[in-house]
Image (cartoon, rainbow, N blue to C red; front, side, top):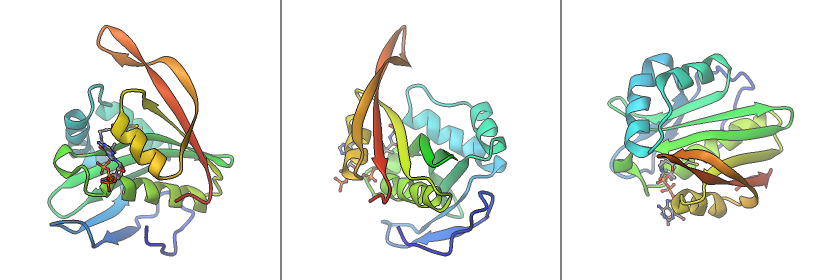
Length: 173
Ligand SMILES: CC(C)(COP(=O)(O)OP(=O)(O)OC[C@H]1O[C@@H](n2cnc3c(N)ncnc32)[C@H](O)[C@@H]1OP(=O)(O)O)[C@@H](O)C(=O)NCCC(=O)NCCS
């Protein structure tokens, strides 16, 4: 991810150009409340158990790092990360199905990690469904490794699915 003079202000309306994506040029920018209908649409398309608009409103109010990749016409990816006392935690990362496997998930996660590093985070944690081999492959490629499991962490219809807990230390890839 291109490095620019990033502010420590989490509300900084920074835009970062991502020119070498296929077909379109997307910008990374802070998520706004007015984005949430499109964000939730992508969330519904990409996740079996999507977050509601209410959850994203709470994330924005909490001052989490909430970012989207967008152009003038569409929002193609969103990610949310909490950052506190030397640690960061990836809360969600989502690329619209039509844009998956174009490098956008990796770019957005890199941007969130870069923001977290500017806010003095040194360790990143995340949970991912055990069955989500695509996401686990992405996180492994970015230097994350499994540090544990949480039994029955995710809803899975009438049942529950285990989470794999992964972590990586800065500097991140
Ligand atoms: C997981 C997710 C964020 C990945 O984003 P993406 O833009 O599709 O992934 P990228 O194109 O950036 O992938 C980068 C690398 O990660 C790995 N990877 C990503 N998706 C993969 C998949 N489905 N299968 C295998 N490897 C995968 C590959 O190594 C890939 O590099 P390559 O394409 O050169 O082989 C996206 O698929 C998604 O939003 N899925 C639905 C929601 C979700 O599961 N989010 C994660 C919750 S923890």
